[in-house]
Length: 354
Image 1 (cartoon, rainbow, N blue to C red):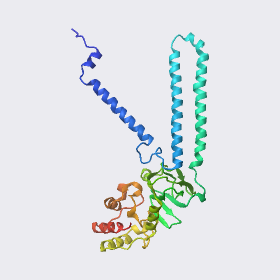
Image 2: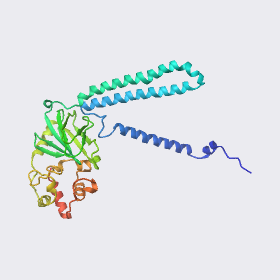
Image 3: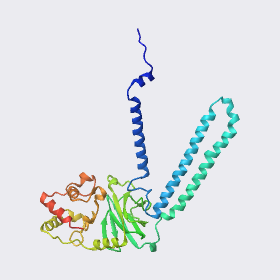
Image 4: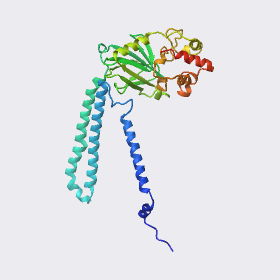
């Protein structure tokens, strides 16, 4: 004898919490999608194009919002046409010719006229925005900074101030700064979303862009062109400071490295000078004059190391010296074989380079 089976709806109703679990899954999915959407828009991100701190970035942000609105209008029109076609398509096939004139007008208006108007308007706005993001004339910039992209760090030079640093660009607030970008190896792309557009570094060519921060702050930059294994770890900071603070930074950077003030620091300098460190790095005021790696004259004053791969702390610096390949695989810096005492003395010396 075959027993009667309950209907599927009755089975679902009999399962305790099944509807609640489904609602929970739907809620979690919605939260994940919302988070991805917000991340894509740059909300709450240190590299947000929607949080401008300069006129060019603000023009780009305004254009982005206008394009978003224009795209939303076109999307809404297309959806409306699809729904209209579905609704009007119901019925007998022989009725279709009687409704074609109105349908054709709707298609022409919504599918051609409206998108054409929106796209032409957005194109005109994009062309109007471009001049504000271009490099200013030389007379408009009171400071020139040369940025050289390398695999994988940014060398920063101030030719008029005799300063060389790495992965940090200090600029005075309210002053136009001409940034000249180049590369010693492959293509890179210099991009500070909150200050201006991205600009490529091309071998054998020097491109230029203007940065003019309207407020003090630290603005994150990033290489925006895939340049190899450690492309993601090729970050830099633009630090906009009040003119008086910037002048203090310039004075500190122009000084040579201080002489060791302790026996441990003196031993650490000897370790630096007698190992591969001095062959790759420069420390002003010492025999070290290598140019393969970043200038370390004032390395302790920087906020991060290895182009953002690690923070500038003694622990991270020690790990970097011992085995940089573990932290940043593919980097050109080789591991340094040092005894614990040698490493401690070296870190003591590097800690004095402010």
